[in-house]
Length: 507
Image (cartoon, rainbow, N blue to C red; front, side, top):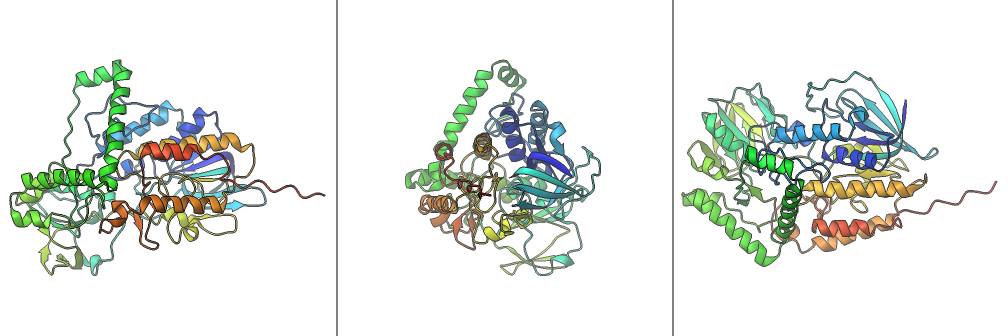
């Protein structure tokens, strides 16, 4: 058994961010549990062709760790993973990591006022990538006892596999985009892709260059705007390294651009109309065929679903190397794939770019609070928390990147930094007491979110998106405001969100 003050689950941006914040606040008794063999989270797991960030690289990083070496406006996946490895070393976190250590369960011990976390060497959920480049010893099963538990497990960790009749009969390579099979021979093959979201629009142009043909099943088209961006020259990188203030100024400009983008994403009529016009002009420029343009044009409001960035997806689809199916993949009959429009297509390989279990976090089943209720049960009507971070019924627990902590207009790392600062501040003020969230504070915050979200395109735009929990119809993934607004809101949390400790019983 290991005894620590703070146990953090997950070593992606959120886990590394909060561990760094706690270290800088003088908290050294911290362990970071990671089920895979290396850090990186999403950027470790996703290795598909063409993977890159769609947030400008100099905003997609920690303020305390500017990176003058980004290759361009938008960083590639392997660069981001390497950046996180760098931050771990720069922050002195390497000896706090326990790699290949999965959380199997966590229970609150009310009698002792602490968390008991059971761990094991094998992945808790099937399909966890095992990047063996950072071996760790086999620890076997172990219990970690912690005063505080931080869940930094990410919202894009578990692939969503659709229920498709006959999927198991497909004879060729079949895998999710987040579990890319690099041993599959796709060059010269007939490759089918199910999905046209953020991953698919990066994958399709890459496969179109080498596959014999690509068949793309599109359930719902996306609004796509120009990506743009440039590569940074050696001179650019040298200037960034020599003049940190230049990087600070660039980050400030990118931050301001992101905050301004909130209007078009959330539903400001004029801003949304202007952005939609940009998207329509982009489609018209790149797809000359009117029928294909119509098939690629969304029938819902701009901003309702995630707005995508690409300069090469439309040309790939229009090139003749890709066949667009106007419908989802509905069934599989061996190597024959059947679309919801009734069309039939032969394929040698099938890639599921079908997203993630974003509103129903798998780790929630593993965490039991004060009365034995699991987070999954507490969130049966959709995720909730006060300040998007602390949950009633789960003492001394913090959740990063969870309820209403994502963004639809800017870098999610900005939200992580605010949450990590909140965790450090709350623990500084804790004084050894048990932190129990007032259920009324959580209810009031949830109602506040609902009021702010009610008029946004995410709720009114006429689409089905992964930001809204279908069980309750509530916006549970996104923060319905700017980063400035979240920073101001979380700053107003003055400790009154926690119940007072009960007075000791006289003896």
